[in-house]
Image (cartoon, rainbow, N blue to C red; front, side, top):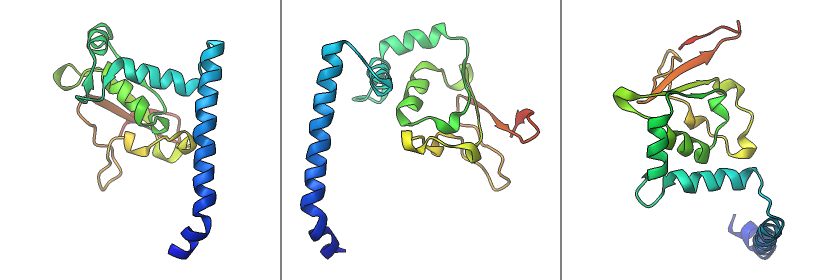
Length: 149
């Protein structure tokens, strides 16, 4: 394995540098045109709503938590960590929980967008979901009828 790394190290470092240069240039071009892409929107929303320094929602998110009666999320198996943090920032937990998730781990198709099945509630030995605090959770059945797991 060390031998393999020795053979590809220079090429991999060059590829990393090219990717970093492309990212910087692409970002500059988007700013120059006043454009954003999906990843930008996701990251801007995350910065606006989640304070990474203290791992808590920002004041803006806390204000929206009070405004939103319900936060419904379909296809939760396809969300990534950033999207999960945005949803956690905007929804309440505990006795005033307002987050409702629907998903099926067997239908997860967005791994290329960093979707993480860990976003789904853990399941017990029977395959039934154990809801995390703040989440109501429904499994999609093949019959098309959604019901609690």
